[in-house]
Image (cartoon, rainbow, N blue to C red; front, side, top):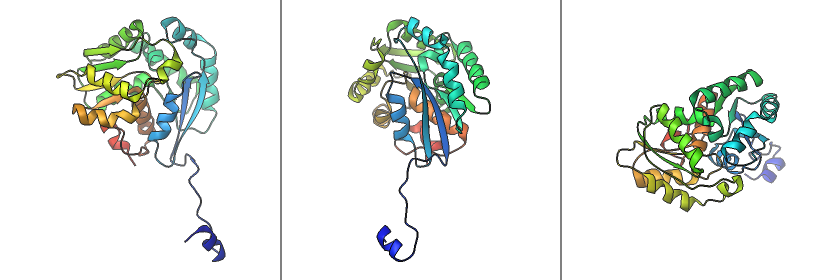
Length: 260
């Protein structure tokens, strides 16, 4: 029955889904120049899950640029603004920014976010990535990133200090945020295939402005092992913390338990 027929019959019309987060609302602190993480979260979100973003400025994807962003008062302001909204989970959407100085640094960031957004469940891209690797029972991994060498090496150090030996890795050497988002899924797919190692139990793809979600299922089919990306992990962990099954199918084995 069409809405016109419903109205004529004295019945209420059927409304279109409007993106309302009736199931869960995910709050995201994201870089002002970045575009990928929001769109991939929305692509993965099932009906009833919404994503709400506050942005902070990233001068450049270098150690100095990330340090500047993390030390700016904008970070606290963003967390407090986002925490004032009726969200269920607050996610800090920067992988390199949260693993920059290792695990202790990421945990300290989480404590700050808890104090700035009291009452909200909190995660970071780095925290979520470790939780995701544990979820897929990963041991040694292969690593793909778009980072410059200095940041790529810190990604290796972060993974290895958390028990995930990096058996093979490659990075693209990109230092501008806009360029990160322009890397095609074809190139991401080829990069992940190139880093695979026979003894790697999973592929990990770092960076939240680096397209991955659309290629994960194809990669898992081709490589026969879990593929975890920082964006996918962040969304999975946000849904897990919210306690909801709020993902669409088709985004990798990690998402199985939270698929609606």
